[in-house]
Image (cartoon, rainbow, N blue to C red; front, top):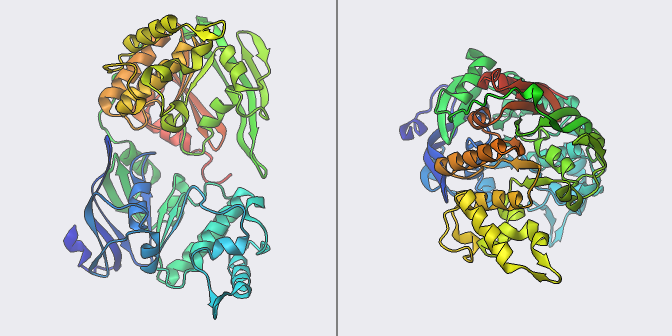
Length: 515
């Protein structure tokens, strides 16, 4: 595709990447990707979570340097050390995670690293005038002196957009999920501005999970799966079912374990009714979610980023005591106040970010495993080392952690084995309900299969498990029943016999045409 960077075809190419690889320890995020951004057009990037979309955009915006491959602009090879260099070439990026300074004002955020000066001084008068002008264009007349931390999320998103629009020589604007926190009305304003930018010859790269939006605003679609481009098309030539088929692919699926259990006869251990979690600044992160969990069952939760999956776990673990709704555990209604109380009641959480929340980096493997259950080994004011060691060794054996010595530092383990330590630590508290948030995130296929075996093994012993996973094939293989969330609302619940990849994808996009 390198030579295509030199062809000025019908729509002119303003930037192309050729044969880009991005390798992180243990995973290849991008594999030989070649991609073109066409002048004055909206190029849409689609793919499941973890397909490599954001990684590709970070490379183009100068946030990351690729492991291999080249970038061309106007027939010349370019490379960006950082975002400042990319910005000098006219490339702006609107992030999915807002990168604003809450303790600074609106105008200070908009002109951060792009200040106008008058002689030796910063020209705040011009900053404020230009801020008022750009926010009027965005139909968001917010006072330029307001602190960004006092704005609601949708308004903050508009400030993030405004920051990019004040760039004088903007050529390419990358938008990573720009509408995820916008209302329908705000989305309409954004689309109007996108059309105006196109008329000015500015190219837009648009990442979105909302398929209806893509069909409305996109000119070209590129689909990524597992770090590779699997399909490209012009929007008028395709429809939503085509997109879903390309995204899910017919690839390798995990072996499904069929469990011959009549679930209607199994005891309900957890019953959740009308679970609501309010959003700061109005609206809900979770709205009237109902579900139950039976003894020995693996319930899957599937949904896109921001669907409310992790929030369900946080409510159950006592991280959001402000939630409302009724939670019944073993037939008794419980009042969830804090984490330690929930651990005592038999809940254990394996968090998604194992490095930050699941492990203590400075402690040994063994200490990490026994951390949440230390109180079981306390004798008077001392820890019963023998009992602790016995349990650690049993746990290491039970979940096949590949380790020479439990006293080695935790970081000496591979990602997959670190993940097993986090699961082992949860299981040592002897829980009734195990909550697993993306248990196979960032580990290789061999380790994944082992993690699934561990999950199945504990379910067989009667442990009730809820698993969140963004990977379709995974959740289909492991769950006895799947609940699908979209924008904080439960859109479907399917038993393992009813599940197909297409039905899951379509349910997870429901309600994504607006709020």
